[in-house]
Picture 1 (tube, rainbow, N blue to C red):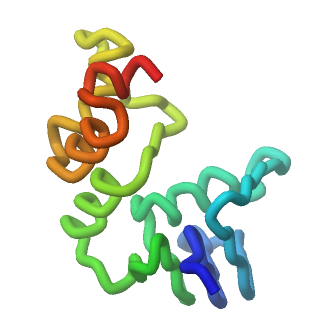
Picture 2 (cartoon, rainbow, N blue to C red; picture 1 turned 45 degrees about the vertical axis):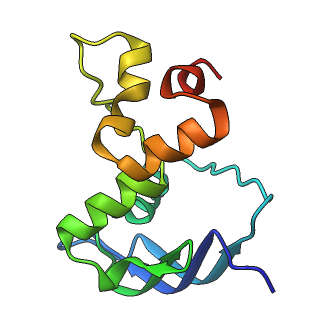
Amino acid sequence: MTQALIELNDLSFSWPGQPVLLDIPEFRLEPGETLFLKGPSGSGKTTLLGLLGGVQKADSGTIRLLGQELGELGSGARDRFRVDHTGYIFQQFNLLPFLSVRENVELPCHFSRLRASRAVQRHGSVDNAAQT
């Protein structure tokens, strides 16, 4: 069995003073699979993405990305994991207005040697990677 890209077990999340918003007993996304996330406003789509990105923490359960359990990581380590291994564009984008679109795309490579190394390995340069 291959390592899942995403593995959720007994995941639960609620905002303070609110009923449970997310209750996911079990979920796996395998390499090569595609997922389309759809639901009405307020159903927890953005919250789930925040949990998967390590921006928010679950009330209970486990979130494992690429074999790493996010709950075992401190805040700084979650930030580093996100920079090194995931692409995360916030709902409000959080793009830097003084940079071009291309420069915003290349920015994670300036913060992560691992990401820059992968871009060079796959595309010959960070610049070439940003063009694809």
